[in-house]
Length: 391
Image 1: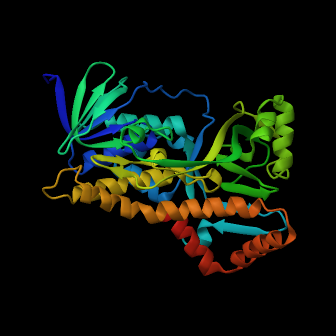
Image 2: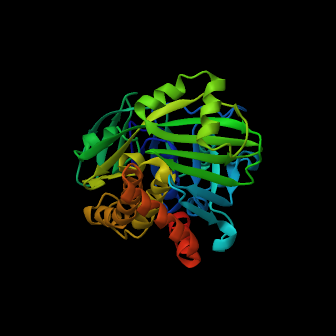
């Protein structure tokens, strides 16, 4: 195909991470011609395990299957979650069980790099997607019917819609003049993978304790992934510990639930914050994923919210009729449809974090009693599972 100086597309997706690439695939699937722009080349996943692990909800899994990515994953590196045991700090307990809720699974646990590679392979096979990589964005000239992207490699792209999928520190969000409010939690998430002594049997574990949240996520075989949300100072202490001492700390935090642990990947820490935007759209621009919102990882729903953004944006644009993909009314429709699920998840995660961060006796009694009551009401618990994992 002869390359022109300036190519025109229905949409240009900036950022080819998990959400960005899935957005490009979803838009291509509804008949749009899409540019996918990414400054960094992706790396092929090796045999080593990723430190970064995601819990993919069944709803997101179905979406990823529809856009052609899920079939590219090796089953041997995907772990099904059948049950989740949650413990409070004062004998509160709640068990979420797929069998009891009448569903096949609660989630699938897999590595970031392998999901990224599966999405990338699907994008390369999609004729309606043109990939510009490595290619960073230099400038954007916003227009009424289309906007012009000047890339750092000298190329230019015209698109009716520019989709910002370039993360929390989004260049596109800034260039579009969309305001974002970030509230640091003064916490970091410590992540690492381990070999375990006691089989997890597809069960995830979570403990709320003195402001900390510790999660054991099952991995294939006798392996598990840790996500420990704690104060930034404590997180750095944990990351700097010798491997054997770090393992002992994690064993203690998890009440020896999986027995002895052996470190599989080095520990790493990343800062946690709440990020909100007033409106995830602007003239000729829409934001998805971490560019549009940020939540605490205690529910493991951040990336699933992003996949929801991608699917909703594609549905809205598929019904555009003769309107431009950057039409303001269309973009407002997308923003309205995403406002409630994003606000609800931010409220739940932020509220739980603050509730379990209170040390006084009355809040402690309320939160743990609430867990125990909810655990005994089967229909309510089943409804909560369907809402959290299947919508």
